[in-house]
Length: 156
Image 1: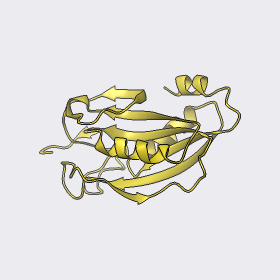
Image 2: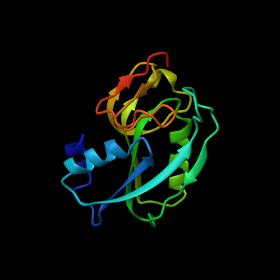
Image 3: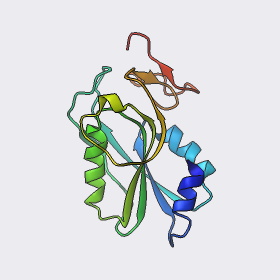
Image 4: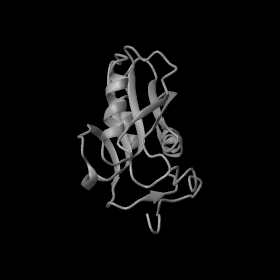
């Protein structure tokens, strides 16, 4: 994935902005950045749609907005997982309003069978079944993010 991204953005004049969606994608975005062969800048956004359970509430709330001026810049939004697509679609539309030169989406895990709203995934790691997963940045009630691998949450 990193080789493909590096090739796609290898000719841009300014560093690619990796826009990590907090908190879940930080581990993946960091590891991805280490394998890129192009210059990058980091920025972060945070949203909430889960609360304290394993089911999305469907209501998306922006908790932290961009801090960089991305107008005219190439942006790669990095997500840990896409489930219904509601949160990612909300964020994609929000970032587009900042008028980047380009905006693409990179996701580690894709739960396509739960999709309610389509999202334009440019780079994808893995398709997964409809099970609640934790680890490698993914959490359940702010726990398990530090696990080194992705695990199915029993009873989730």
